[in-house]
Image (cartoon, rainbow, N blue to C red; front, side, top):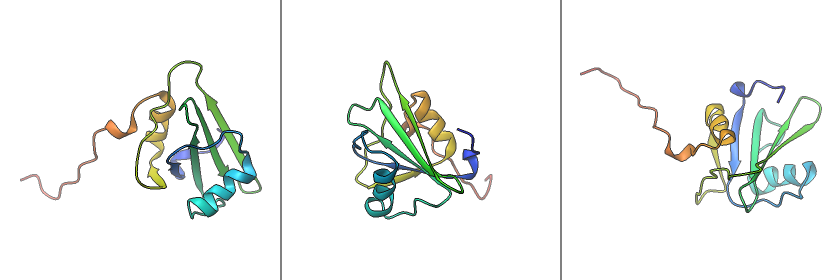
Length: 115
């Protein structure tokens, strides 16, 4: 991708998406199904039933971009959730694309005192 994903929000559409869908239908899924703005500074990630194909849709100032990755062997570790969509950070997107399970990462801890 030719964008700085660290400055973008990343949303996964949980469940199965038909990978025959292209830009128009995926952008409608973002707007109507996920109730989000497809023109925002965000990446929207979709996965197929077999978990071997991902598509990423985003708006790039004057048009939509669609990126696809198909695994020849192995599967993406696609999360299961009751939600329609979940937000992850850009580092977890990198983990997902590398085949790691984003749900098993250590949680970020926040402390207010050392004692």
